[in-house]
Image 1 (cartoon, rainbow, N blue to C red):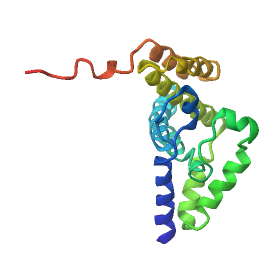
Image 2 (tube, rainbow, N blue to C red):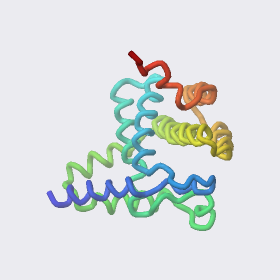
Image 3 (cartoon, rainbow, N blue to C red):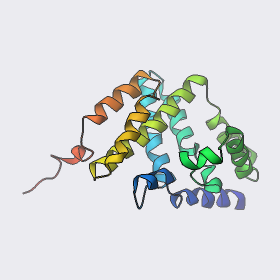
Length: 188
């Protein structure tokens, strides 16, 4: 039981790990890795359905998105400038993730490993979801005055692989990030 409690507390570290790349854009208090992972899970679910995956596939990608940056609880969020000098490898990420679950019950270890063992197609969709979440965050920063974040959106646009991700990005670029709530407030 203690090992599960410890793992959950470690997951809580992600609430305190900032998405550090935004500091280069002078965002003083960027979102946390936990916030990024949450919205990535939403995007992954939607994108999976848009790409024709069944409900189980969409849930699988949603779950994978929740766990996809868990290694950052120990390694931190390494932005691209840092990565130039200290490359983050998939091997290192997998080693940390393996260490993180080493002491939890085998049933939980297996479930987490299964959640992260994706097919090639699923990996492409998940990566697009990860990129898209970053683009949505960049748009929110642009809309509050961090104009440099526009370059992030352009960079992400060239990396997207799925048709659905490209369509979502094109639609997102036409919107203000506050449009969703306009018309919802009611004044009596």
